Amino acid sequence: MRKVDTVNENKFCAVILAAGKGTRMKSDLAKVLHVLNGKPLLYYSIAAAKEAGAEKIVAVIGHQADDVREKFANSGCIFVEQKPQLGTGHAVLQAKDILADYKGLTVILCGDVPLLKSTTIKSLVENHVASKAVVSVLTTIPPPPHAYGRIVKDDKGNVLKIVEHKDATEVERKIGEINTGIYCVDTKYLFSALGKVTDNNQQHEYYLTDIVEIACREGQKVKSFIASDYVEVMGINTLEELARAEKYILA
Image (tube, rainbow, N blue to C red; front, top):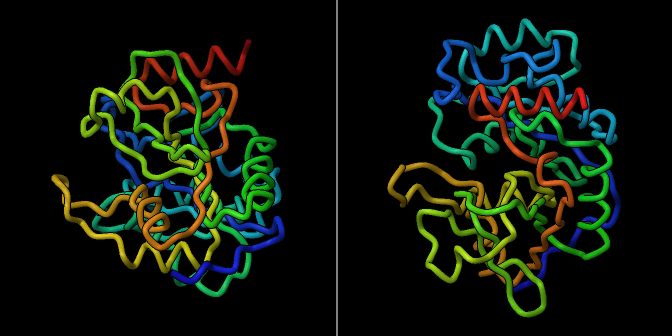
């Protein structure tokens, strides 16, 4: 299979996934509007993307979309709506019309990962370019036990696939490196690969993680970049985690 011409400069746009309801928060408020240290969660992802040098920021919103738009009306973000919500791959596809002709990279961020530093985003991009990867996954190694997707690699350190905890074998569950849901992808390749993702799974959703296996199948290079501080890249799914993040920020 022909190799994709990799992007050899550090220019990037950011797509922030911010459509979820956040049912585990046990609240009527959209997850990204929950307040952390006086600011909504989404504020932190936008600020980190700007600080890291994103040329354009697209936020994919859904639950309470009007409230999110209003709250971030002056953020400089471009908002696109995901409805219905058919998974993370489908969410990123909502940015296709805006980014399809973009010649640089796309960094995919999560609106519920507020502790991510701009320096980590920059390092992910730099590592992506230096390794001539087409897809790079930001990973980390948290203390067990946990139920995150595992990063399966070959003996050269190339990423082969991401296996969800529930689908992982006993051997795969012993892998320490996990997926954070944050990626750097050559933009042209991103939308090409997303066009090949199917909803042939139990949830009938289009998973962003599938682009890793698609890239490997097509002979493209997929690398991981490990964030050394696992707390920095953890998502906020419960009010307890929100309180923990507040402690981390104020420490």
